[in-house]
Amino acid sequence: MKTALNRRLADRLAQLRAAEGWTLDQLAARSGVSRAALSRLENAEVSPTVDVIARLADAHGMALSQLLSQVEEAEPGHIRRDDQPSLRDEATGVRHRVLSPPAASFALHIEEITLPPDRELAQQQGSLPGQERQIVMLSGYMTAIVEDSPQALGPGDVLRFRQYGATRFVTEKGQGARFLLCISGA
Image 1 (cartoon, rainbow, N blue to C red):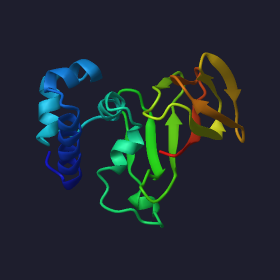
Image 2: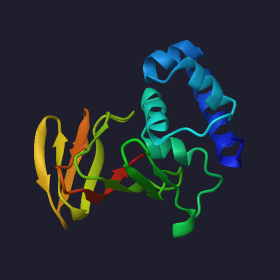
Image 3: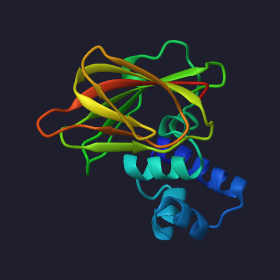
Image 4: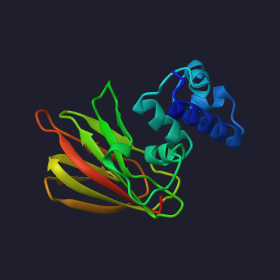
């Protein structure tokens, strides 16, 4: 599926792997994505799922939105809704919309995440330990677990923290959540 975006993503993934000096087998071991799937991705033969892109971003020590921003063509100041990348993981139903992608000329990036009921979304520590993050709850309820400390969040709540380890977002049966994830210095 050779769309322009898939081609740019394929090229960037190959560049990142080469910069690390990793073979396909080494990246497969680090990411949990099969060698065959990695080869097809780097050749733009398939469109990756959100989960696969997130695993590859994590293997390279970056957030999903950081990797996606690296395949965008420009750094506009005004980002129209239609120009905001939106990805939905078909297996989990989790939706990511990158409202303001990381960019060299801006210190903040913002994602809108929709987490369906009875789901868990885990985010590993990025490449910058202690990076400032803020969660702004738009609707629904969830528990954010930061360094094994659970915080119950509802509409209008804000959680500010510095990420030094894994963070998990958990929704209960019958109640999903929609929130903004703001990351400084991405």
